[in-house]
Structures are given as structure tokens and as C-alpha cells.
Length: 600
Image (cartoon, rainbow, N blue to C red; front, side):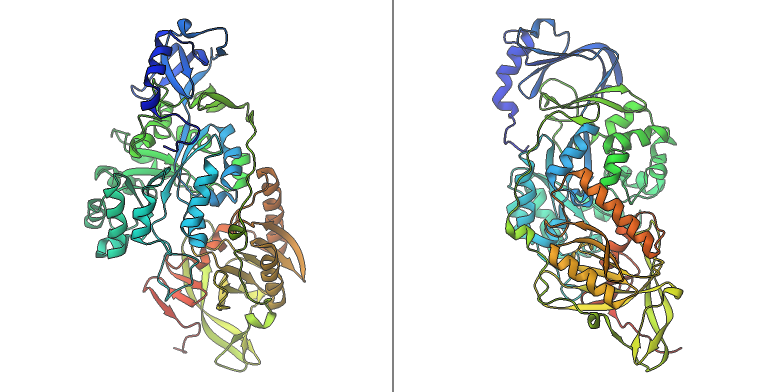
């Protein structure tokens, strides 16, 4: 447990016993609520909860614990449930710092998250992980870190990353307060092939008595068994009922995901709603929540509500967002239930089925009511090393996006990345790209745009340029320093001049996302912390993101939330075709390929 400002159970046992017996008075008593008991799966009416310090001393009748200084909250007619826990989330996907994220999710009843900071780790390495851990100690939200396992995602042959985390780094970090697990092991082929780096990281984690988080897309027979045999204990990548069931059956926790970009709950929840299996190996998680969805839909309250809408019993849905998650991460002595000895992370719900959050209590104090924070959470300063991360040695010029073709005029056959809305996958298509004066060019009439990646970590000046189809751009360009997983500068456009303008805007502001047309900035979201995060309030970030979305539409893109689709263009671990600063990568064959292909 993160210890700063919070008690350890071994230090307060006598105090809690005295409070439960009435020898000392409680600091807070929640009276007369309908307790959702996640241990037994029942609702107990008219229950009191007595809190001493930041922990629960008594659940039952608490009259004898009330003194003149005890704060009493009337919970009659409301449901008393544990604070919600997100078992797998990348805070960076919200574009918010830890502080901003805490401000956004606490009013929605989230009191603990298990965060994999592999986005900031790919930029800043272990220093980025430390930065998020240190910031988390100043917020009422409990932030546990699952240490990123795949930094970088691929070898230096395929891209230039900002950092590297080695097995020895993992061994060191497992001793840090707040590091709870090894983050999602995306390189499952490496695990199955006996890769020394991956097995070294797993061994360091298991040796520290901590759990290993998974990310598995292989077959559900021998490969799944082999993956589980390596010590992996969870997976959030199930997209079918069958996959969810198979993982639970080999002892892996099936994390059912309902994020902003990846919405798998309706399908995977069928593993529970259409069977009679025990549900304790299932957890509800977000993986990613974009800032406008945090505001408009919510966080874990939304996901629990969605599970109930898909036919799950409300108590079971709450278990999947509380006790099951705590048991998986081995923190159930402290979290996951409204029970004696646990931290006093308590929600009062107006409605169980609609998951309407009335009051949020974290560490024994009220932090939110009726969707609004009731406490101040100060904004920390961020060190220069976290802000100065866009290291491109000279301004980008339109000529940097020229593509030499194998012919002088006419067309040339080229490999083109085809994006698909609301899908992590791309396709490789062969397109006759127009050529003039020996240069291949974009063509809005063909829905053909250029895509470029510019290395931004080490100042090498490295870059590559290719083509992409599917965005529908009629004019202009967009750029982003959110480009999974190495987060180099990614630019897409149909005008070389606008591509240069977009790249230079982000070079000047220290990172973010921008849309440009005819040399004019139409929308900009500044993300100065690691080129990934904003330290502005969530409401301001949402305003800017909405403005950027309007700018994309003005350029001709009609996709719903296209930013993540763009950001994945540079991720060379998901099929079929991707682009990095080193060139085009055929992920199916895991090799670099030429842009142009010979005529058939």
C-alpha cells in the first residue's frame, strides 16, 4: 500500500478495537444504510459503519461509537458499497496528470486504480514511473502502479524509443512503495518462445511476491496454458465470450474492458450472464478513458452500470469492481469491501441498478457529493525533464515530407496503411499512388494522405514517410506526440506545407495534438508533460479536445474519436502494416518492408 498519509493495519489494530468496543469514539459514522456485502452477495438493511482515522472499525450497530465530535452521515434509503476500483487503466489515455485524473474520477466513485504507466515510461523510463508515483501520494485516490513490462515495445531495429526498462530495473522497482505488479506482458510471443528478457522480468516480479498482468491474443489451448504457466494471472484483452471463459478456466482473471476506444463488455460479459460459472475470476476495467467520456459518461460507475444493463446482477457487478480486483492484486485485507479493518473507501448510492453516486468517502473523509469534489487537490509542479521532451533539432520543412518515387510521372504501386474505424487493426493495401516530377503525392480525391513519423526523443532527425487511407481528409494536416508506444511525432496530411506547420507547432509547445489547414491552426490540445499529459483542469482539456474533434471534421474526417486510430499507426506490434521512424513495418511477418512494390 502507498503509505504516505495512510495508516498500516499493523499500527492501528488496538485503536480500531477500542473504537469498535466504544472505548474511544469514532471519527465518522455512516448510519442506517443498505449495506451491499460483497463477501456474501447480500444486502443488509439498516447497517451502520463506524470509522476511526482512515479505517473501518465496526459494521453493524454503532450507537456506542458516537461521541460529541463524531461526524454522522444519514444513509437511510441509500446503498452503502465499497469504493470502486479500476483494475487496469492507463492514466495517460485521459491526457490528464495523476492529479487531474483523480479530480475527474473521484466524484464518480473510483477510489483506487491499478495503473500501467507504460506511455510515460516509453518517453521517460523509470523516471516517468517515479514521477507518477510521487504525484499519486498527494491525492485522495489510491494509485497502484503495475510496472511497464514492454519498454520499448520492439527492438531498436524497428523504431527509436525514448527509454528502456530491463529485468534489473524491474527487480529494483518491485521494491518501491506503490508498485503492485508487473504491467501487461504484451510480448506474449516472447514469453512462449522463452525470451530471456521477458522471463527475467516475470521472475523478478514473482520473486518479489507480486502478480504479473497479461495481454494475450494467442490460441486458447496450448498457448494460453503456456502463458498461464509462466505466472501470468490476468488479461484484459478478451473480445469474445469464449476467450473470457477460457482464461478464467485456467485461473487467469478475466478483466472485462469497457473503455472509450475498446468496448468489449457487451460481448465478454456473456461468459457470465449466459453460464452458471463462479464470477470471482472476473473484474471490470476501463483500460482507457478519454477526458470527455470521464465528464459525459463517468468512470467505473459507468462500467458497473453497463454491466448491469447487459443483464448482470448489480451485486455481482459491484463485486467485479471491488472485491474481485482487490483479491487479484492481494490487497483485500485493506481494500475491496466495507468491512472492519479495511480503509474507509465507501460510496453511498441513490440507486443500485442505476449506480447513482451520491457521496464518496475516501480514507474516512467525504471527498465528493452529488458529482462534485468537496476537497482541494493542489496541482504539483512538474520538473523540466518531464516537459522538455520534444527534441527535434531543427524546424520541420515541407521538403521533409517529399517521397521519391521509382518513376518520374504517372503512378507507382505502393504499400498503403488502411485504417478501420473503432479497430486496433490496420490492413496493407496496394495502391497506385500518383507521381509527378519523380515525387509521390497525396490525393484527397482518392482518400490518400501522407503519414510521417519523426523521432523526437534523442534529436537524431530520423524520420520516415508513407501513405495512409481511411481518414477521409480533404485538406490540411494533423499531428500528435501521442503515438503508441514510443510516442515519436506522428503527422498525417494531404499538404506538405500543413504537415510541416503541424509538426512545428508541437515542436514549439512541447507536445500535444493539433489540426492545421492552409497554414492556420484549427485546433490544438497542448500536452506539455512528456508530450502526453496536460496539467490543466479536465474541463479545459475537454473543451480543447472537442475543438480538435471539430477541426478534424473540418478537414474531412468523419470518424468518431479518430485520435486513437491515428495514435496506433506507429505501434509495430499489432497487424498488419505500421510506420515508425525507421520505416514501414509488416507486423504479420515482423520485418521492415519497402514503400514501393514492383509491378505484378
